[in-house]
Image (cartoon, rainbow, N blue to C red):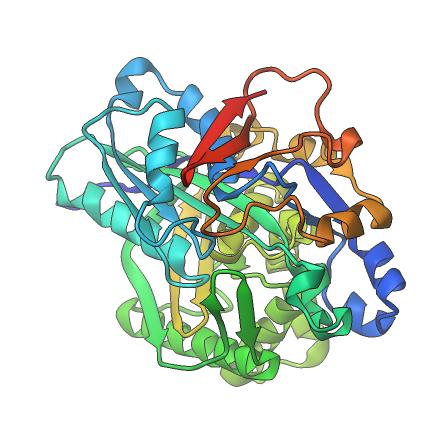
Length: 418
């Protein structure tokens, strides 16, 4: 008999520094009405001593630290989900295992499937728990991605266009178990839609390429196709009536708005005013954190989930529909139930407070980072990190619970707590 399964605990880490994206758009001379369609306010900017490992560990540490010694010992799988890997062979999960001091009997590995990676990791963890091959075991699933624009990588700033303001950084950590306090998944309730398309890709370690219009079309096709497959599997599923809230993969809010509009028109021929109201009610809350960190790739749908749980009124359990998309492409629509207990537990993580405490970069400081001189790129053999590259961003009184990159020695990354 199938028991409960889902997310027991969860956290989002939005880095140590951010940029006001309206200031950036003014500075770049971008079209403001088009900028406003992004539905963005801030974007996390990774500092040189922050990398996918530090983001991942800093997201997961509060989750792991809150466990009893007995529960911590039951973490038997660590999955990192990223398209910002730092080695073609060595997994980020090995660093998480070390710096989170997890048990040695862990299965460690990494998933790369564009922005779908987080959902691939979550579903793999869910099926591990459901298999009962190790009853009571838990899995730690961490999504971690950073975008680092560098002047040296672009022929002109203008080529970045509107992807620069929306490209962010962040990590989500999800503890998956048979005690799903945060989100109880509807096991077996899912729909997939996939096909080969060259919408966006990373053909080299520091190179991104893509077709924005093609990516939008693929996203819209997948949203409709994945829900259609979900409805085929789940008797009586109705996009408008079944889900109290919705969380979509969020490259930027305007893309989510377009996908929601597409489905409401396709399924119900809903008039514009009703579509707008439904978006504000069922998807508006999901943008609470995404509009502050930018596109976090594999983690963006879970950043949306955290924003929804933290901001909506939850006096009783509510079913949430989630749509995950990854370029190239693969997508999934699935669902789960959140409860007042889940809201209380998630709010204890203080996600909003941590975002408020980030350092606000000036345009001059941001452009200094764009030179890329201090960035430890993929394949770097040796490096020493300058903690004072942006003096104001370095914490003056650390608590010893934030991981940063110190150096790279013969390709091995060394980290320390501050």
